[in-house]
Length: 190
Image (cartoon, rainbow, N blue to C red; front, side, top):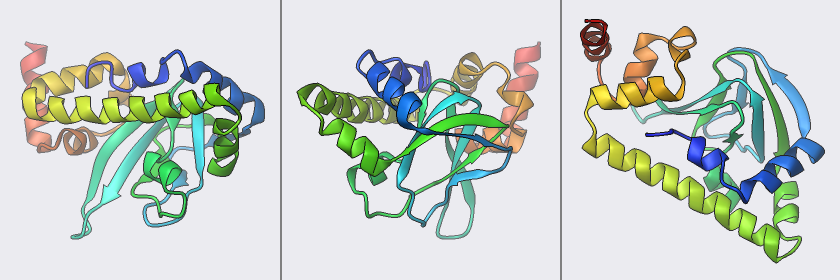
């Protein structure tokens, strides 16, 4: 989780994608709790977050809600699976954790942009590669880092995240109990 999504958003080729979305996208302000995408429903759009914080959740077969990711200011939001396979329903719900300002585009417009020329095809490749890299690093971190290290990584990436999300949500994201996060917090305060 080191640098969380930052390496993804700051890839040099993705600057053109950001500029395209800012120029051609629709600007909206999501209020806290407002959903951008709903698990199981078609979501045919991706976004660039100008300012804010979005949470990715997934409901499992037993009806339990799991926090599976966050996207921060100056990063891209959406479902890579839906971008790759447009007729698939969203695998996650994406909602605003706080009031957020975003620009979004339908995936069809993004596909038209990617099909423009060889350079824009490379931008799509960079987007997919960076998404894979982010997911792979997060997977390795979940196996190789302690819960305390994962918690510190999250705080380093977004120092004020505790102002926006509950202890229970942090625990869900880290796949531990709230008591475990409380113990880590107490230890770090010493």
